[in-house]
Image (tube, rainbow, N blue to C red; front, top):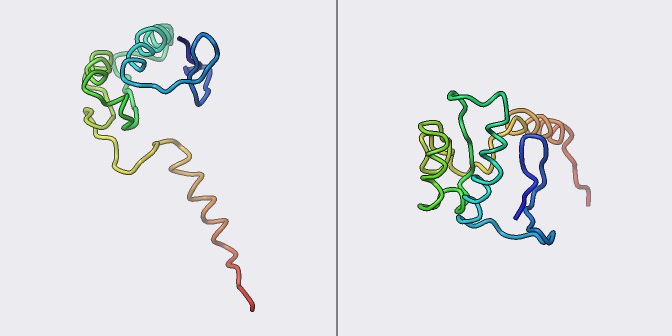
Length: 118
């Protein structure tokens, strides 16, 4: 099994050895953490004991099987549903776009109101 998510690469899906996309369950998530994420993290010079880990509330991320493994990797530094800092409710992601881009786009879209003439 392989995935192409990491510090240098991002693809919004995961694929097996045959190139077929698959769903990430708790077991696969833990396997990806151990076989890909942790080794990549160990090679990343910016990672240290002050590094926090943020994940959304996906079931595979917060299951009773996978959450202890994530806590082991990031003790006391987990932003997640049922984490050291709770993931904000109804928040799909916390990215810079949430804090800048969407409000900027909304302000531009809302500037010119359309009028409907019958």
